[in-house]
Image (cartoon, rainbow, N blue to C red; front, side, top):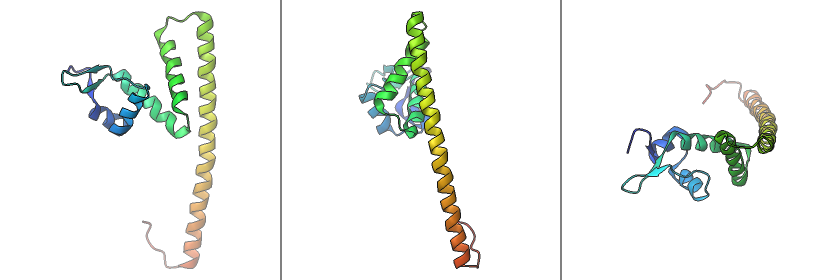
Length: 138
């Protein structure tokens, strides 16, 4: 194994994804290891880690595996730099749509978080009223 490649355990530690999740993303074609060792172990390059990080960031926003695949194909094509002008415009438009969707989903999560924080504060208020002897936070 050369210094440019990592085994799946190191990739899992860097991405904070489980081995099972990384293997699942491989089975679905989202991330393919760049190489295999002589013993058949998966070997990943930095580019593979970057792809996994994109997937990891999309997951909590509710993007589907197909959407993840589509976005990765878009960015792969744009990164390749060999697209015609018309195709580049189309790819950039699709990329912009993903950015808009991500921004909207982030805003939805912020709203949900605000409601959850309000709820937790309400519970704390009720606890203080019901038990005036203040207990240290857990």
